[in-house]
Image (cartoon, one colour):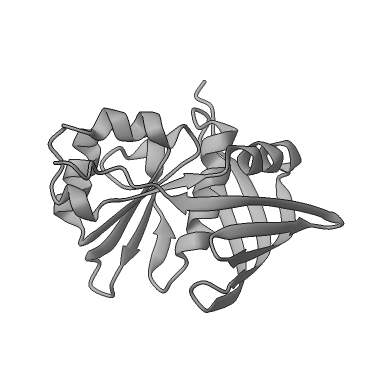
Amino acid sequence: MALTSTIYTFDLTLSDVDRGCYETLALRVAMHPSESPEYFVTRVLAYCLEYTEGLAFSNGLSDPDEPALAVRDLTGTIKAWIEVGAPEAARIHKASKAAPRVAVYTHKDAAKLAERWRGERIHRADAVELYAVDQALVANLVAALQRRMSFALAVTSGHLYLTLGERMLEGAVQRYPWQSTDA
């Protein structure tokens, strides 16, 4: 018998001062059985950090040809390909050919990921954005994860403040300069 995805419901208030984005969101997000909780919460955080019109979760792990998140215009054309975790360079190469903007949010060691990518063939490599999500924030959010959650997320100067009831979690999301400057 195949395992099924677990559905999580998030009611959240997003206040992204950095981008001037203030929204109230109601999300139903499926966690695939093979998806780690760390990957899952990073995917939800990436959704919040990238929130814009046309942003949607894809089938993700069920459809390996799709990004974790994508921004599409009204014609269905991909405007932004957003990956989560530690994708292979070949996947980023493919993404960069398919979309004008590619971003990766990693909950893993960004330096190790960048080292794996260096020297690999990646189309428009200089335009690929790599973001390192604070590993302690991810771990704390995983520990607090429930099937139904309400929280507020404030983003200012790359710092995240996540309020869960009386509890406050915080951490940074930083763009990681993965391209070698001496190339």
